[in-house]
Image (cartoon, rainbow, N blue to C red):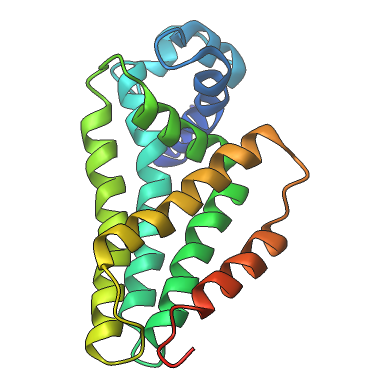
Length: 197
């Protein structure tokens, strides 16, 4: 009796193992043979699940984006949270993702920072910009409601998102960087944005 394979589970397994190859070898130099070897099967088996390494790469990033976008949407729509708490929550979601799924977040940063176009960066940049724009929306909403000081929302959104990018880079370089310490410092910074502070 043939073994029944869960197609989507196998795709997730391949993508998860491919992430480490992409991080170690770089997106351009990664190859299907090495990915297949890590998965414990032949290269031709990968073609049952993906057309090429670019498709694996995009699938791997899709998982992290969907997770972050879903959590972000729920947080922003929570009527019980004020703007400052939403900003803290947004940073917590993104920083936690960079801790929990460090390699995928490194890939996102690598792709954004890569000066040689691969054809993979446009969607990644667009989705990253959409996340950055959420910060601006929350800032504008908070100012409109009188919860936050009057500031230029665009530059502040850029600055807040830069904290996440810096955390991804620093956590990839230094394993001693603490999520708790980073969030404590972030809360202190964001507290200064509250109206009346």
